[in-house]
Amino acid sequence: MTALLCHQFPCLSDNYGVLVHDPHTGATASIDAPDANAVKAALAEMGWSLTDIFVTHHHADHTGGIDALKSDGVTVTGPAAEAAKIKGLDRSVSEGDTVRLGDHEAEILETPGHTLGHIAYWFKADNLAFAGDTLFALGCGRVFEGTPPMMWDSLKKLRAMPDATVVYCGHEYTLSNARFALTVDPGNAALKSRAAAIEAMRDRGEPTLPTTIGAERATNPFLRPDDPGIRAAVKMPGADDAAVFAEIRALKDRF
Image 1 (cartoon, helix red, strand yellow):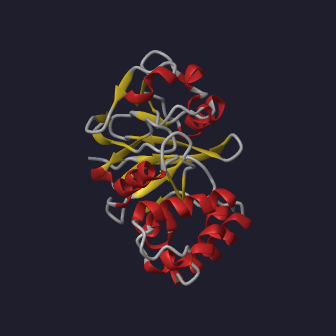
Image 2 (spheres, rainbow, N blue to C red):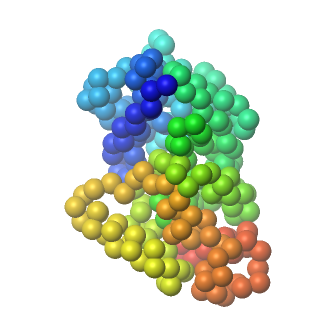
């Protein structure tokens, strides 16, 4: 089986679009549809033809391009819990369902918190995951519709993936996330090194994504509320993980 190819590109103000392509069958998915013109330009650049749109959640900066991209032969898949909010959906999926892209299969994970019906697509055999706005490099999405315990449960699903899993996220927020992470995890040498590298990457105009689960497990405070150093920094040594996570999220919201 040929490996999936991924092409990431910036769009809107700070979003990333991603095309995923199976060279053997020619099947190509757009992960979300932030901006139709940007997706069309990326397709033309790569010489690929769109067959699928895999939607993670209903927010307009992830669905705004669906109408202009949808045509005969393009199937739009998205979260069943948000089907009423996503115009043009052809297939609704929930946790435990799978979707195919050519020869490759993705598992659906329900990852609510940012929105109530948010999902992630995990191509387990390919060590590849598309997390939308649940997980960011060194961060996580704001908890708009759900609750902090709900978001923490979602992040635990992603944290449990193998370290080698490559993760694509919806936005370029890494520099701000790194600066915040250092305030709650100042003794983390791996984080200090990564933060310095991120500063240099952004100075050069380079993307900081994709990331890996291994890198996030080591340096992302939102995946590490059980870490004693972080607990000490937020003055919650004896609290449960969900409460510590909620405090980290609240601190970031005010950062």
